Length: 317
Image 1 (cartoon, one colour):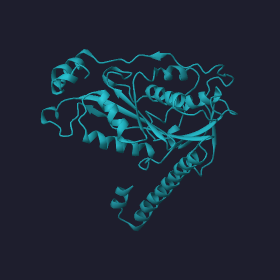
Image 2 (spheres, helix red, strand yellow):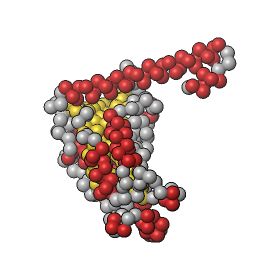
Image 3 (cartoon, one colour):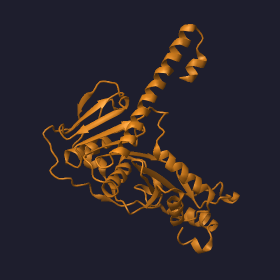
Image 4 (cartoon, helix red, strand yellow):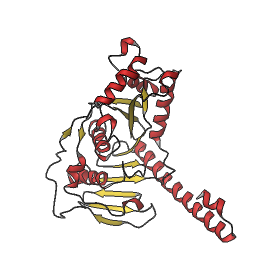
């Protein structure tokens, strides 16, 4: 949009370009206000209403030194992905996913719906107080958050009576600042200042970085094949990318109520393949084991990276 303003030549082009970006900014401010209201309500009505936010941080590498040694700058170090789940304004769960503990070989499939839903489900079941309704925020990434599987998961929760209502909300792309980002900021600040060679040390850095940051290590949670489980009953959501608000209610099983923006009109979309189908129990998908490292990756880490780890910690690495 800024580029369109810069490239505008005629007065009409300038007026049109500035009008488009003005509307965009206003809509972003409105969605930001929705997020702030949800957070404030969760603080005031903590017994009956909760607000959650989740997102991925950029991965970190091991070993890490506050004064990084030049020999390891060009190496492919051991990668650890961080998934943050913020519980209202109280605490943030930080899932530390080593590349050997991901669903796919060598850290692959960490950002897919199976991984995202496995961690969200664990957080809701193990660390959140059961409530009838909640709101949950995410960004607009279609591969991670805005897809039929995440929508199907929230439909499954209300259809099985775990909640009576859920709102899944997204801010405008480019304006998705949230509390989970502040947790990542304090985490990364502490990470940069400390020498960290093992996952245990990384978990300690996370826990000490803030009173609200909590580290979680696999296998505290379980990977599950949510895609296969949900695709048996729910169909694709055509045109999902244009919507920012998704609402689920127990009174409308299999129906998602969507809006393009907060002030927009509501539309009801049925996602059940069989409209008469109902879940009888809240059984979850079968567990999936972490795929581990390939032989080539193991050999590379042993040969090129482990020698830069202090000898007493080399076995843990």
